Image (cartoon, rainbow, N blue to C red):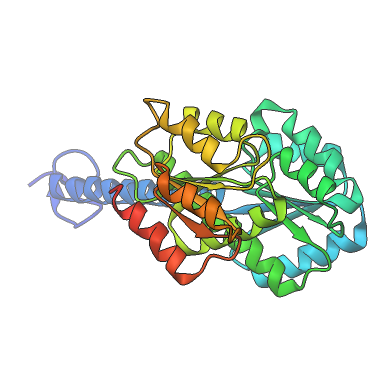
Length: 312
């Protein structure tokens, strides 16, 4: 018998280096190797995607000492988050443009307000969550900062534990809102509008609501702003302060009930008055009821919950 031995198994073959059986084995081995390579590529892409979606917090502060302390506190308290820190405004803007930032932390005592204005003047950053820290408690300053669109205002001095807790809570709320906005299925959170002109009461009421209810919370400091929010976003429930100037809680209620698009939304009046006449007027109105402000009692929270559950 003429021929040559197969280089794989030694079987005598007429032509070539390998017999048909060995060739098939080599082809199968090559296919398996190709599948392993593709799997490795997919895993690498998945890893890159996960890195792109990691939660990133950026601290902007020209004061090096405060910047370093804030960064260290957040890195220790929130090890699962990526913390960026810069003392340069141009570097901060370039970073915001080039990558996804989940939260920006500014300090009003170190040009934070100027940086906030610069951020809000950019259309692409108008919805960027911002927390601002400040040692000031003056109502005019605080009100001006909130008017520029911040999600939280932290009064200094602030303990490391409190800062970590506030940042963590903000991230959780923003991620919850983002998930709700992207989910095409039924919403799992409620939309609540809080209308309150007193900035200090607003902070306390907002924190209480966010801690007790799965909600997308909108806030307004005037009746006009509240109506704009309702027209654009709607709501499942409205909480409005009775004691607002110009357009008080009952007048705001009239604006809502006279609008066919909004009149089905329940309105709860918030008040700190004990005046029988005022409370009687609220009871006679189309309001869903009233609660005491700014410290909501357990009964008040249960009442809010009952109105929300009816919106399911």
